[in-house]
Length: 111
Length: 114
Image 1 (cartoon, each protein chain N blue to C red):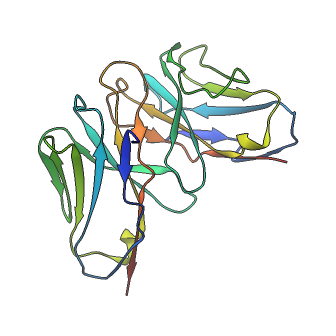
Image 2 (cartoon, each protein chain N blue to C red):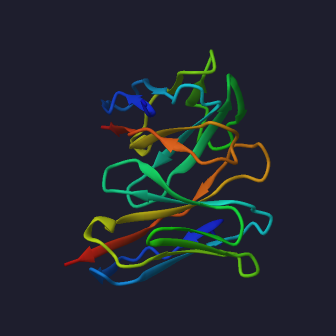
Image 3 (cartoon, rainbow over the protein chains, first blue to last red):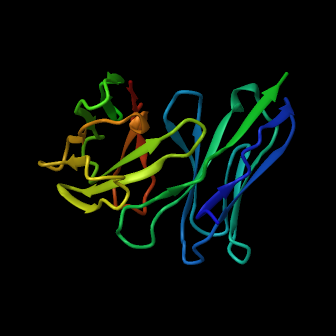
């Protein structure tokens, strides 16, 4: 099993839809998590940080389920501009540097 | 303010050549990371610096890969005797704090080895 797993998609949704992605992680000691957005041939950009049970920022909500070891990202009222690949990342528990990224979930929002 | 910058943005090398990739982190950022990203996959960790100290190099795939950050700012990733399997996008990221904190990525260097 990979350390961080994501459903690759693609998720194809109409504008205005609500869509959710999950990311499962294997290290039960992980304390914090990040969602990044990556547009085609661009670098990842931080979308949200998740340090406790969850976080909300406008149309975006991230939730953490420690018992089942997954984090989710919910996007409400999808916009065309939300089309991208969404990566989840799990930083290390020690000061070792290895953050582990999932392979991403691709979202396409269609008019 | 200026973000993370990387150069060159594109590099084509013949198999067996040595290449050097440069990263300029955000000013004041203590931590610097190198990742390798293949098409359709997430970034794979290569190495991590805190200031000038290389604290983790567990992700470097072979001894042909070497990274340095001698003054705790600019970093260089060097690949010796490049192979076709080295073709990928090499991303650099920096963080204000430690490896626990959010990272800010540069635009990457797309390396193609012929």
